[in-house]
Amino acid sequence: MRLAAQTWGKGGRRILLLHGITANAVGWWRVGADLADRGWHVTAPDLRGHGETGVADSYRFADHAADVLSLGTGWDAVLGHSMGGAIAVVAATADPLWTKGLILQDPAVAMSPHIDEVIGWLLDDYRRPITTERLATESPRWDRRDAETKAEALLAAPPEMVEETIRVNWPWMLVEETAALRVPTVVIGSDPATGGLLPITLGDWFAATNPLIDYVMLPGSSHSVHRDADAYKTYLMALIAGLARLPTLRTEFDQGARG
Image (cartoon, rainbow, N blue to C red; front, side):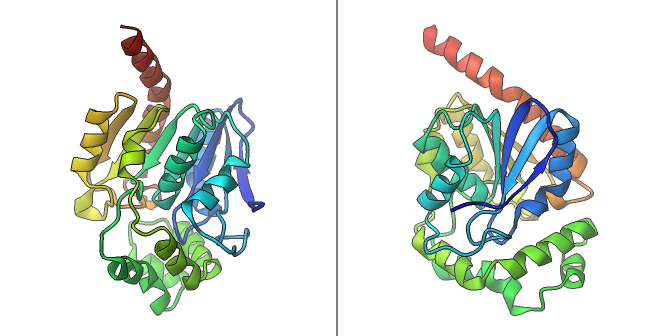
């Protein structure tokens, strides 16, 4: 599909931002601007079924991966949050030259084995009024603009698409693919005690299994830490540090292979 996209900055380094399920490109508003200020040319697409891109006839990971691969190759970095992280793993597995490195932000690479539980959790937002006021009240850590963009994103993402996405990709399990990544990868995990999706033990295992993977967990962060006004500065520092770490992971890996 042709993906609608937001862009920030005109720097020489190119980064692609992939949002999660029921989100959209505009949700990266603060991250995009801050990366642009640091010399990045930022592109954030609306994935199929989301934002201004519109609905599709299939929502398999492979279809999403084909969409983002069509946006070009040789990215200096790709940042994927939640489902966007899963799509980034599939795309990087399909084409190791697609990006020089990955940042996986609390990636949805392993879900609960109970499909009805997962669908119920994701559809809960649709059972109540989708308004900025409700979201701001229920997520008091968010900037109000995040509540606004999330409400708009939910209204543009049909619940039928959300359920279909879960069902066609079930069992939602990309642990082996993540552990086998051949591109430098920094996993920024959120705190499971405050809504993080990726288990700490799994993040630690990725880093122990693959020398191209680093893992850090941000204490007190929610699943969508880029929306947490009180934790955003810590998240941004971790993101900038992760982007700087990507080339060194490759260098260390290559030196280890030669040794």
